[in-house]
Length: 403
Ligand SMILES: [Zn+2]
Image 1 (cartoon, helix red, strand yellow):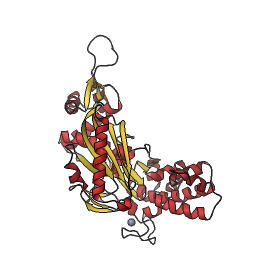
Image 2: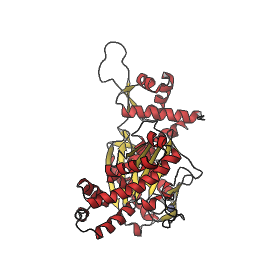
Image 3: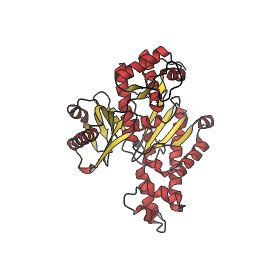
Image 4: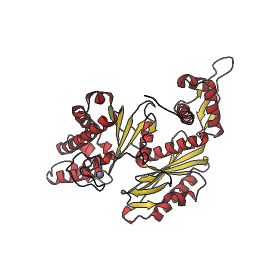
């Protein structure tokens, strides 16, 4: 395959690789980075100098004395003074987390709201309030905020940074960005929640894993495709509407205009409807007891019931797994991916869901494609969107120094 990569893209990709190596390896030397990346010592030095001039990387004295002669100076991510805020804005509320540059969460604030009465001024007020509270909470330990990114379930206009539509939040054509940016002197980004979750999850895998597909299954089904470390770009940006691929041509009418869409068969809403229906006809299932516990989500209750061998819960998960598996067959046949990750709250259903999906995909997908594709569950379920938003911000900060 012929690939045309600009010098700038190459430099950005190299910088991200060097940054990532320093992030995951405590105390790594320039020579060691050069050996691993196979980039010349001059290239490494120039990248490291740039990262150091931004204060993202610092030099540390070696931990142990390796004998006489010159010791190799090791490099580390600067985990003091500078921080990033990642936020998760969804239909239940806003969660904001301050991370240091090693991506350790330092402080979290969450506020809930009622989406039925939500207006854009209220969203802006809430976001400002959480950012201000987080800045106050970490003051003393950190003094420079590099940026904030808010992950949101919406279709965004990348040029205007405005929200085109969010069915989850019931808002349309609003500009949250300019009113927020006017208040603060650090960069603010809004990004789609599936994109930031995919960004966070991709960090768990080798850079070379490609194509890498992330499915975010909550009330809807979102997806992102990463090819050679870049999000697949369509004419309208990076969104891929796998959730609106028809898997039942004569199925129910979808709000998108199509019929029998994938997300009409596989989502947490579908799970809730199936569960309530099944429970009405089967009163002796342990599910009713598990679901009556306060604060337990429907997907956690079902996952627990499966572990307790409840036949009703097992049947519900197996049905969802077949529908999810059928959709994934199309994804495998179209993209020939190396990795598909099932994320979002539906992934709480766990291994039974995964095994069912794998079985269905094995039956129906193009055999050599299925054999090359690993299907797995999301590795980092906690804080995925806030963490992804923070990683996204740091990537943008690194990019800004190269442009
Ligand atoms: Zn649809």
